[in-house]
Image (cartoon, rainbow, N blue to C red; front, side, top):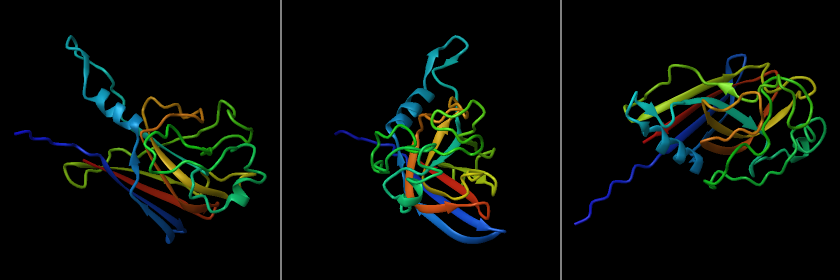
Length: 206
């Protein structure tokens, strides 16, 4: 008799949009753990040497990033027009059912300049999550981040139609746009302006 036990990584994503503390909209999704995320977990549990010992990989989940890509972008007229079209160029083809996704399709800066990809060295593309993470139950971890009223949208990007989000490990570089992530989701557009803050709670379930 053969007994199998498959460990499946499941997720829950909640995005809450607030204006002066009042909830104005929200997005709730069940998103995907990418192939790169599976590779990340496989490396995270292994040693390269028992002398020391030396971990094969020792970085943890550390960042979130947002973009205007993905196939659920409902404001293509805004996303594909000035001032967003050139600095955040790209298509809207990625889905949250494709485990082969590598990075955000059209990542947007949290803060920085206005030039086209790859942008400037001082640009910040990823936001660090809050620590410590929360464990709702022993087999779950929730990563949280609040994107403030001044983040993501700044002159001339006064309205940013967000439609994709990704989790990134600690090896990611916050000052470059094309980081590789471990988990991904697309969602119906949220028009981020200086009036709103975004609270993201992303729960990984085993």
